[in-house]
Structure formats: structure tokens, C-alpha cells
Length: 159
Image (cartoon, rainbow, N blue to C red; front, side, top):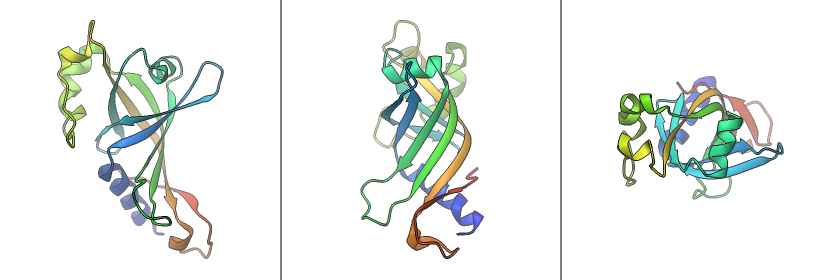
């Protein structure tokens, strides 16, 4: 596949889905995988809402380097597309909430948006942000144009 096709695939997968698998590292160095509903802000920032007491939220606080996978599990076998993202994640500081709340909830696909007052102080939830540092896409073997037949990851630049 050409680079422009890989980039388009990454955009299609990010735009076409609502859940991502968030990969964090627990205190013992093991992986922690958590499905979360996300909102993309372009292709370099993803937002989600979680409890600060959630295991993955504690992992993000202590070890902000994360991995993300986005894919549509409803497609037939062999038709899947996926995006693999490396990112740095953090809770959005309270003083930034007003500035980012519009982009963090610009599309909700049926989920409700949150107001800044619901994400600070004694509230049960917080807004988190992942800033993408790397992107790869899943290329099915049947779609490869380089003569190979096995599924591979290829770098992409969706933004």
C-alpha cells in the first residue's frame, strides 16, 4: 500500500470507531488493557473520561507512556483494519478544562458530553488526554502490494 493509503486507513479507523483499547503499565511492569470510549481531536490527540481511582488512571499518573489500539470488531474475518498508537497520556489539568471541553466532546455518537464542573473537584470523573507520538496501521496480507502475504504493521501519518 502507498503511504497516502496507509494514512487514509488510519484516519478512517480513528474516525469510524468510538472505543479504543488503552494499554497502560501497572506498578509491576505488566500490561493493563482497558476499553474506553474516546473522542479524537484531529489525529494527534484523543480524549476519554474515567474515574481517577480506576486502575488504568493510576497507571497513567505514574507511567504516562501508553499504547492504544483502535479497530472494528464487527467486520468479517480478513476485512479488519486497525490503528496502533503510541502516546503520552495525562489527566487534563483543571485549569485547562474550559479551554478543551469543546473539542473533547465535539462528537459523542450518542454518549453525553460532560461539563467542566463534572470533571473537577469532588466529581467522580476526570478528563484524560493522549497525545499521539507514533502511528502504525494493520495491513492484511491480502492487501499487501509488496509481494508478502502475512499481515504486517506499517507506519502511517494520519494528521
